[in-house]
Image (cartoon, rainbow, N blue to C red; front, side, top):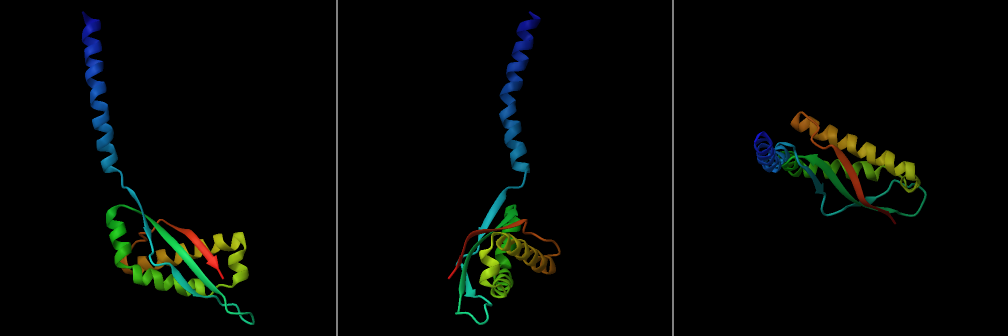
Length: 135
């Protein structure tokens, strides 16, 4: 008799596990990727060379829909900061693999600093290049 009661108890508990897992997922903040559309386009700071352009498709990683709404609200400021940063680069810097990573980190720092000045906290967790073209 005790074995039947124990097995019934275990079966009923196992049926509740998916509901508990769904509840835990609801509490965890979701990750969102906000693409800056249209792509950022501008001139590079190559002096003494022919005119060169950049095109950057950028995505910003945030946690939660509220953070994404803040990023959307401040998108003009973010775009401005990134265009100024990219326009100050040279093609030699961007073409080097370590140069692109350094640029990505600088761009993330600038975006976080700009949003922190407006919101009081850096909402953006990461910045990703979906595409970075030099022509």
